[in-house]
Amino acid sequence: GRISRNLAVSISAEETSPITGFTAGDGKVIELPRGGKVKIPTARAGAFKGRINFIPRGLPANITAPAGAINANQNAGEFEITLRNTTPTGTYTFYLDAVAEQVDYTHNPEAATAAAERKKEVDALKAKADADAKAASDTKATADKAAADAATAVAQATTAKAAADTALGAANTAAEAAATNAANTKKSAAANPADENLKTAVAMAQKAAEAANAKAAAANEDVAAAQKSLDEATAKAKAADEAKVLADEQAAKATELAAQAAALKTATDKLATDTANAAKAKKVNVPIVSTPVTIKITPAPITLAPPSAAALKQGAMAEVPLAITRLYDFNDQVNLQVVIPSGVAGISIPNTNVPANMSAGKVQISAAANATVGQHQLIVRATMSLNGQALTVEQPLQVTIAKADPAPAETSE
Image (cartoon, rainbow, N blue to C red; front, side):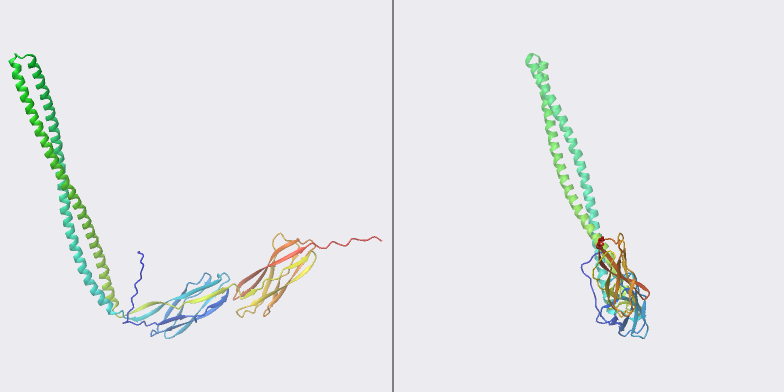
């Protein structure tokens, strides 16, 4: 897939939706506790009177929320959600993911006409891109051949230059040898001025040296000519290579554009076909979503007020009053239990309850003579049942046990 900065949305003035509204709830926040149940109304608006099936989406875990429907020829309905004692508390917004069944729908023919016109434009664009790609390919082939020919010419010029260098080396060696021979012969003739043969040898050696020098000069000119040819061939090869690179780039771009044009044509052809088919009248299932519903889930149908701290001595008793606030018309009995932490001995607190329709209770704390002295953090646990779901609310209770007063000393008479 691709990431896009923009999303295009098209709105047709030629069409009107057969479903102009689908609402869930009344727009107010629905508040209920764990274990609670609530029925939420649904309604629709518009010309469509067929069946709308829906399922809630976006609810937290541990909620029973079955699929529902607004039946054909009915404008309203309802669905029920049931919370469990493990449903997470908090505020959540959800919606109904719905499908309107067999809606009479004709997609706007203007879209099909526009797609057909676009297809003509893209067909012309693809034809031009194909022609440009072929021309670029032909140019590339010509440039490839020119570069290959230039490379061959460089190779031949390099070989010719190497041969000229070799010939020049040989000519220079021969010239040096002839010069040395001429010098030696002159030296011998100078030592024997009456020797006619040496005089003849001097003339011949001098002539040979001059001929060798002439050959060396000619070989040097051949080297210069070969170097010039090599330089010219190298320059032509460089130009041919640059032309080849440019032709390769242009051919690659033209090929890529042709491929893009082909892909665009495929997509445009499909769009033209799809929009033409879509313009035909048919019955379709239309996905819709409801207005959002916000629910607030609380821990229980009561709140337990933080109890006051209790302080007593070993061997004593104390009462701690407890108060609950009833919510959501919950009026059943609430059971009370105090959890004593491990390591704390000698404290007994019988279970009790807040009777139905009442909001106050109390717990009785008894400290044995050997009760653990100190400040202890106990837990008051209120439990109740709502729709068969066991619910718990807790508050900390601080209990301080002090040592008992010492027994008075016995007096003797």
